[in-house]
Image (cartoon, rainbow over all chains, first blue to last red):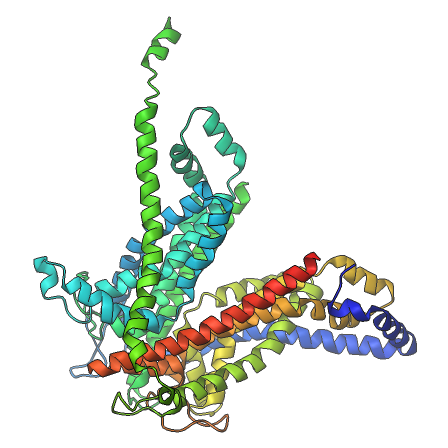
Length: 321
Length: 295
């Protein structure tokens, strides 16, 4: 029998249940229906939230798209919504966002995958149980802290690299933001990939060992290919996280929308633009103000696409075993 | 004949393959070192830069134009307001939703939509929640840039996490306990009220504290709501303006003077201590209940 908790008081509970059950069965049924409804409404809040997000983004950007065509917004190559001559091409913000996100993946994919293979195929149980929570801390550190770190530590270190290309690295640049963001999303890649690898049936490994494969061959040629959907899903979800990350890029990557693939330049991401404008003086209802909802709508659709894609890939791997 | 031919071609070459194994293993170790080093250098850097600026007046003073006099009083109180109200909003709704999905929900299309929707909401970028709060709470419901609007926005942001954690806690209540109560003639609501919820409270608390600790460090949606970085009073009413710790840190980081870098690091130390405390409490609750149920 369990000690503690509500079971200490079990006899009185039983008595009270019996009493109320006997005295007013109809009142109990009515209460049950009301309570059922209240719980249902609580669950409905999540649906209302989604509807609220979609509606508020759509309605506010509708005003924007009345002035600027969707085509101009999506294909324009100059973003200057405040300074004249005004121009509303979102591509510089998109390129900035993707640039930082791919730099982050370039760090997080090899590191996260290496950690996942080690944890799933090599690590003794004790090591695994200590290492995992420590690495998870990386995902729990607030992103302003990473922004501070990128700006005041990583960028100066990069500027000290004795290569001509790093000599005139700007204070704000995509590279240091991307590197630090990569470290931040390592645990996302590693824990999701590890889950996928642990789910690979033991018999596959044993068959490979029986054929004389070494440990690394089992890991790289049997386990990783068998878990590939889960691993790819972890990349997609980490990518989505990187696209939506805000404070780190606002602090460290700059505020100059620029259509470039050069990581040494200062850029601006979609999220950083939203913060910049939200901090400014743009009056509600003005075209400048509505731009953040148009950019937000694009951001929402991009991350939603990535998340749905990621979950679809994960479900495929589940069906195989 | 053919078999002998194949056998002569078979070269296990085990030595070379084992060397490759060792090289790969070294690479895996390197990956771990990168992750751990990132964490260690980050913490060391913050402590080194921020510790000299930490003092009692830093906690109790208002922000200032001079780094020597700056403090984070308004930010600390703002964060307390936001977290308190967010907790008050999310716990009832989150637990209610979790109870519905685990105990009441029929297996139909609507339930499936709700479940898929919750997991998708958890992946929406936090700044998008900020835009939602700006459009709905600040403008449409005319709450202004207030603590209330901030807390409601934050509640929607952490709600999926609270629901997912509460569902797990509720699922771990053994069904035999429910059946025993039904056997005594309890109604469904009585089972929920007397058996399911009391037994899942530790799990719900752990999940909620972890969700709120995420909320403490969240700056982006709060910037969209508050838009304030320099505030020299403490909110005393849910409709007052506010700022929170990560916004204050963001403001200090983005100033060019060297002194504010140190102040920012000191603010980060305070923020990290708060987060560490919250996480320690959550882990403590989880461990205590685990030990008890093993007895």
